[in-house]
Length: 294
Image (tube, rainbow, N blue to C red):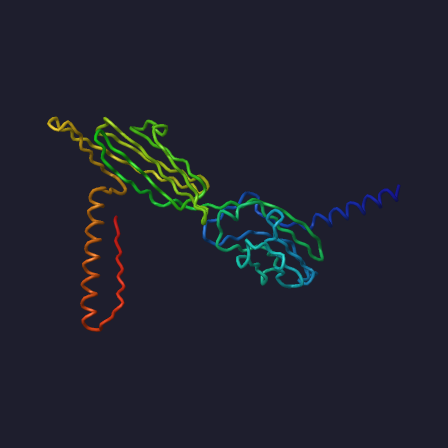
C-alpha cells in the first residue's frame, strides 16, 4: 500500500513539474496592418536557474521556419526566404521570459498560423495562433457622367485588404443587385482595387448611398449622393446635377484640359530649345509637368 502511495506521489510530482512550464501566446487571431511592423507575442516562465545558453526559441508558420534562436544568438540558416531581413527577437528581454517576434513590413502573404516553440533548462512547450493582415481602403472616388436618358455613376477605391462588401441604397432601399462590381487584386502588393457601376434612367431627385465594409478593421465607408434632374420640354432631355458627391469629374472638361496641356507642353519645349540653341549651340532640355485633378 505504501508503495502505491509513493508511486502516485511521484506521478503527481512529475505532472506538476511538467505543467509549471507554460508558455503564453494570444488566444485570438492577431491582425497586422499592411506595411507596418507586427509583434507576435510569446512568453515563457523563468526562474533563478534559467540559462540563456540552454534556451532554444523557434518561430514557424506551418512548416516554414520564420526565426530561430539557440547558442545565445540568432540562427537563420534555415529561415524561409519570405522572412529574410524582416524578423527579430527581443534578446535583451529574454531574461524576463520574452520570446516575442517582431515581423516588419507585413503584407497579405504573411497571414497564416504561427507556432512559438520554446525549450529551456526548466521545460519545453509550443503553442500556435492565427495571424491575418488587413489594410484600410482609400477614400472612394466618383466618376459622374451624363447619358442621353440618364446618368452613370462609377465609384472606385483601392489599397485595401481583404476583399470588401459593397452596398448601394436608393431612398434606403437596397439596389445592390442593379449594380456591377469588379474586384481585382494587385499582383505585387496583394491589395484590392474595387470598382462599382450604377446606371440610372428616368430618375429624378434621388438620394443614393454607397457603402463599403471592411470587416476585419471595422472600416465602414458611407457616402451620400443627391441627384437632381431639370427636365426641358423643348429639348426632351434631362440635365442631372450631383450634390454631395465626393469627386465630380466632367469628362469633356477633362479632355479639353489634357489637350490644352499637351499643346502648351509642345510650345514651351520648342521655344526653350530655340533659345538654348542660340546661346550654347546644344542644350539638353528636360521638362516635367505635374497636373492634379481634385
